[in-house]
Image (cartoon, rainbow, N blue to C red; front, side, top):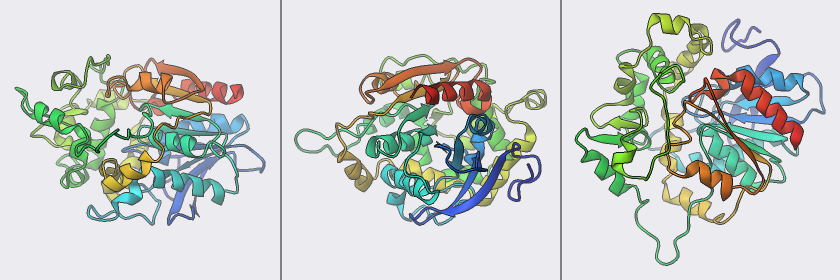
Length: 379
């Protein structure tokens, strides 16, 4: 389908784009399928970093054919959505999880719905989906988390509150390794991260090609396993896109893993014309809007708001989908087990798909659509 934003041939037939105000300060760019007639149950799909609503293009039509109205927004800080603060020193708390969940809630209302059949989140969209289901189970009636397990609300210490997030000692230990390392999330919170990725020596498009390749099943060294503990020696076993060499930015980290021309030409899940959509959007916007999410996670005001929900669980039907070649479910020791046993009370299963790394809904779109339809039918 020809699209005025992305160009001819970039969207599947049956998917359209438009912009709608969400009542929370944003004019939200959405992709939608199954919009032709009213009365369909709504499925909401939330992307992660560095992605867009476009990341869901391959699974939207199968769900629409099955009778759903499927909507995927460019979230706050991303793509063609406007109204967000993209200044590093700007409004950080607007990127807190509860406000991102409010963005989703407002979009649902603006679309004319009182409830959502399922909210589905990938990568950083996963905790947003998790918070939606935890805070408003009457609206978000089921949840699918993809590639990043949702750990639930932050703990509330018994006794005087701690002054550290518990990660400072780990970061110092990583720097003391023979090959000093740093966690990618901490790097993403630095002032230089946006410039490094927005204006890399290889250009934005080649940076994204290498980044997506490095975290996909196409990179043969992606063979994740459970880490024994949250220690520097264990974390250093992860690929450098998660635990980086201390003296490199992300652009330099992935540059050495740029796929060959033959690999690029054989990449069916992200051919060059589709990569160009990501490249053009990030070339225009930069990455700071998405990077603010990482910084907001540790902001005292954001954490304090989330602590109001300490002890709360997700009580609607829940499922996890990831790639068998993805470290996303393994980067926090015990994270997937907590999702399966303590963060949810109506857990319907974990699915780790062969032939998929981190970008599971793009790498194995058909199997993801099949799992989603089965989950929706079982509710």
